[in-house]
Image 1 (tube, helix red, strand yellow):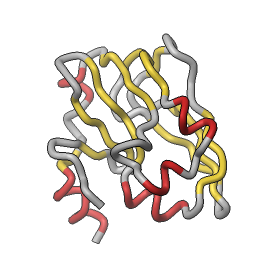
Image 2 (cartoon, one colour):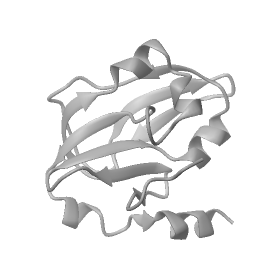
Image 3 (cartoon, helix red, strand yellow):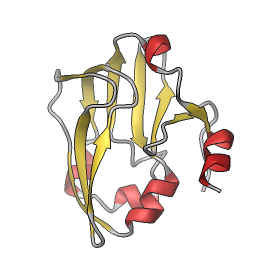
Length: 127
């Protein structure tokens, strides 16, 4: 699996990818997706909803379990991945490319991102 350059990961297994100065893509890491198994349902928030860092913004259900997904940085939802609602299995196949969850306008990315890890450090933490 190809992991995009420059993503940051939370200890709760969400990733953040900067699109431009205020727009960020958020999704689940390949590790989280692998642990969940076959994903059968995703509930995403409504556009224009605001969330603080650490708040639950989505729910993912797999054949194994249901999991809450937490905001790695605070912000306002500007886009959701509609394809995932219809075809949640996309997340299993492509968590970084087609399987992103939401795009946000971050409130204060630099203040919120201090505890996020670069992907290589995140992978080291898992071992």
